[in-house]
Length: 111
Length: 114
Image (cartoon, rainbow over all chains, first blue to last red; front, side):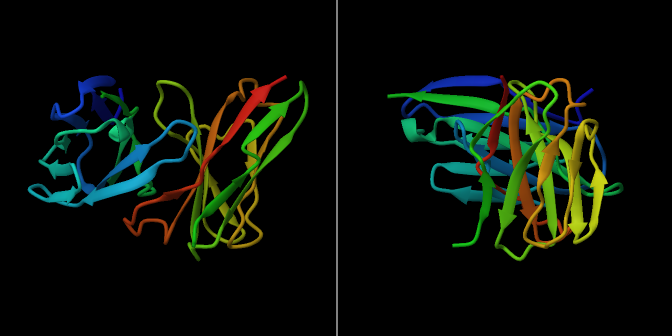
């Protein structure tokens, strides 16, 4: 069973059609939740870190929120250039503290 | 600009051959990591190092080896014992292991079998 689950696996939107991506986790002791954007053939690019429930971070059309067991990445009025795979990673207390990654959500925004 | 450089971008391996993927960083980070990415899978940790001359196995270390002789460099060798090496390999670094700071990634090496 995955410790970090992202949904949906894939999402197609029309330009301007707002939506949300979900990242949920099962393990207790959250130290940090990270969102990344990955373009095809490239490495992940860091977007946000969230540390505690209730925290929100914003960057252009993206807004990340965190509750006790999940995070949402809200995309407002997306543009085709927002098309990418969005990865979530969670760091837990105990063990090596190395973040565990979800499988990602592939987002395509049509003009 | 500081960052992580991975080379080569594409690599082909013949049967029974070992190949080495390069990863260099100029961010002055102590911790470095190697991940493998397959379609539909999350990033899976191969090896990590929190300091020079020290490294630890990750979740899928079998068939791989690493070295950390310099702070800036963390090469990954894919040995002939790795029977399914075709994948996208990503190198990352962070300030320190357990610092709760985000990881910085290179642009990957795509390894294929000839």
